[in-house]
Length: 298
Image (cartoon, rainbow, N blue to C red):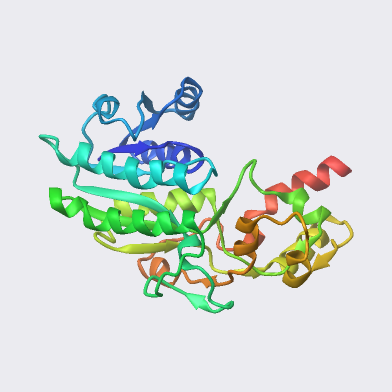
């Protein structure tokens, strides 16, 4: 199987490594030379192209599957639309119109599309209720990823990723230092985010469907922070309620809306497809980082 990974960043690099190790051909696509260097260091082929530029995408070889994992870099809704909607449309149309189009197209979305559910459980059937302009863009992109590929005879899949953590992205000090605001964390280790996408491709599953990619155990931020502190052998951090955080004068509107959204994401569908997590909960996923923290303090 030949797989093109558009926006081959944190998750995409791990996906490319896994596909390559499994005997597939992975081609990572980035806009910058530094991005191409990262792909080369990961051990697979890189091509310089921009998802918003159909002409540059012509440099990407034909593929059996295309994974759209590009990021807007945490910028505003306008920048998000340029990548997640305009870039996604450009990529689907560019690959779909080829003489040898891909067999399927996978778009990596975010659990931010759910909005607030008062801490209740959500799954793939839960109605979406985005609360910010950026998450509204993500909902539009999901619709595009499901509806546009079939116009070219291509199956679309949405992999809806929870908060990604992993090597160099654990935010350990933030939780140890505090203060920690209440609410739920829905997380997935980078290796499982990439592993789940590779699994869906390799097992030929979830065509035309959406799959939540999240670990087994959504956890309260307070519980998580106390567990981290105990495991690291430090004092538990200060806590604050949502109401206390909302009273902060420097709180942005974006942060305010995020505080007012709470849900627990279910991975029942992914588990039902027989995906086996490398890190089923944060306890396994944070072990290496905790061990390094304790070793540095010894």
